[in-house]
Length: 222
Ligand code: DX5
Ligand code: ZN
Image 1 (cartoon, rainbow, N blue to C red):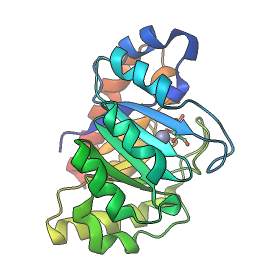
Image 2 (cartoon, rainbow, N blue to C red):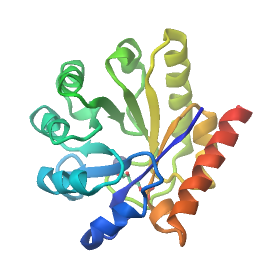
Image 3 (spheres, helix red, strand yellow):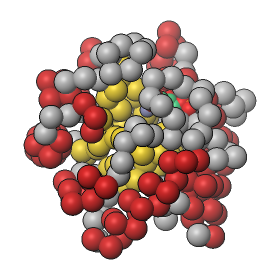
């Protein structure tokens, strides 16, 4: 497994976004948290800001939509060029139809589940997605503690994906650090979002490399 590390720019300095994006050039994707103050009690940015981030970023965008009514908004993020667009299962009326639309526009289609949402309803539709995001904190804020109780759900999704031969990335997001990334890798994650662990480090590039190495070692041990 070659682990993907996606730094979350939620932990970046918003008024220096261009240089903050340049700092993560050695990472895999820039994780962009879109929050609408409805689906989650926090507000970040919308399509216009993400369009400029897309034009400025040295690496592709992994957009995480924590918003209600993703049917209305998600396609626009694919159209502006985001490589990956993930919406929440809890917010979608017809997740399969929306994923198909995102793929048709040319983005990878992702679906996210909150810590309290079961993974089983996704088993039969794994092929419809390029990425499943298992939230390892309650969505809304960076800097929270990793929830290890989400690991059995992640492990079960990995087993299902393997059993069905589904080519789907399993992403974790929330509280991922040098201390917690190993558990998530061992449980089957291959794509790791990290906000404070990357932008809070003295050496951002070393943090990305260190997280990737730690995930690779843990997945080999599993
Ligand atoms: C939380 C966001 C995360 C957040 C992660 O709702 O989806 O992407 O930025 O931040 P850390 O890594 O600090 O927990
Ligand atoms: Zn996120």
